[in-house]
Amino acid sequence: MGQRSLILAVGSLLSLAGCPPPPPQPPPPPPVATPLTMQEKVVTDFEVAILTSPDEYEALFDFDAVGEMEILLHRYDLNGRLANLDGQQKAEYAAEDGTPYPAERERHNVGNFYKTLGQRTVGTSGRCVPREPRTHYAKLLGSYPPLPAGTPPKYEELRAHANAWLAKGGVVGLRCRGGRGGLVLVYTEKDNKRGYDLITIYDD
Image 1 (cartoon, rainbow, N blue to C red):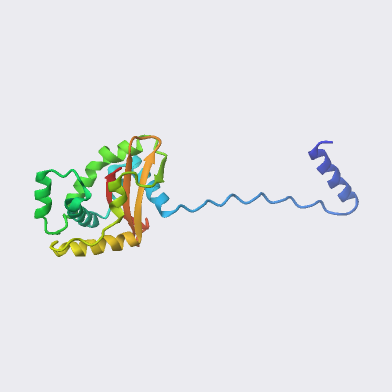
Image 2 (spheres, rainbow, N blue to C red; image 1 turned 30 degrees about the vertical axis):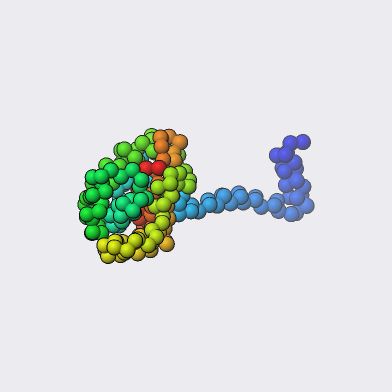
């Protein structure tokens, strides 16, 4: 006897005995989605933004913070973090006094990375996943130890900001099945709808 026939037979017997048939069972609850970690959210949002438009990509960044981070990184590069600086770059970085780059400059520069880094890495099909930063330089983007004596004083304020941002943020690498190469994103949690801002981006 098939299952449906058995159910009908049981229902008929219960009716003859004066008992109502058992109520239908409710469907099982849908599976609960596992919340994204912050690193997963940063990578997912970046992928969606790249696949949407340059404006969505730029909206991920705090460009005032990017301007601070870029000047600060120049000082660490000058102190040996970046080994292949040429003479012109060394002279340029040595002349800087710790004044952050303006936000509009960084919006333009980071905007140029939309195609050269963003679209290259994400590609057309996306499917991006977080990973540990790959290169030595990328791994150091979350570390800003004390600077040597004689460093212009403005850099100490930039260093304090960077360490405070990283204390409530982090560094995440990403690679995408639909693209080429990799990227590293530095982010800090913010009280905004997204929950964070990007504060720099580098090739990885």
